[in-house]
Length: 329
Image (tube, rainbow, N blue to C red; front, side):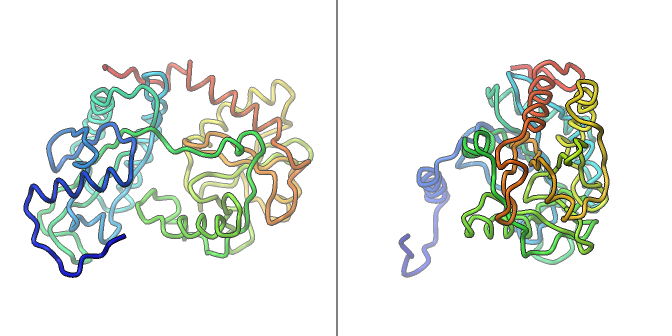
């Protein structure tokens, strides 16, 4: 990286050239970006920007959520939007228009992107106009929608499973954990710590020693006697994928694959004795954890219940008509 000896006063043309050069150095797969501040959609990644004095940028006063695009249809958008609205209320953020108007913008931005498989991420901010702690007087909320290829994970996570550690960073207090805000510093530090240790991810424990969540995913277990257990959602994010799988999982009880389903506090000692441990999230879907703090989980291989849950989710993403929205390309 070359550091200029003195700042240069840039022209608008030079700024645009600089933004495009940045994207050439850091190639991205962003297909479309809606900005309420610009009043429309852009498809050039160099133009996918927001003002630096937006309160979401310099104070973290913003929220976000994500939904998936599967074969030209949006999966589970309404569940994610419901959580988005709850996060806005907890963050004292005014909505951009109504929930239905934001939903319509998300669907139409997806259509303009042309992308038939990938992810939709959308944000709400309190707007620009001040560097103070409180939002600027009269600032309008900013609403942004990004259509992109989705997060990519190593293939071995599916074939071999993941190795995780108990993070040394404290879990967020419940109010902040259940709100999907843009303040992800503890989550970022957790994942960086794990990678620096040669591992794939981390796991939060709460003050009582109960299992919390991972960096941007929920954690679930299958006990030695076959019960599917998930931590309670009162101190962790209510993952939409976890909630959907908990609704689908009774099919595995009927098949005799699991003995029951419980959402409860899970002490770490009990969790470590599980025969299966897994990560669940909209990007990773379902992936087995085979090692935690250097100790093997189960037989140290991806588990059968994780595979069965993934199959349930994949089928729901293909044919769950009440969860799918056709995109008007």
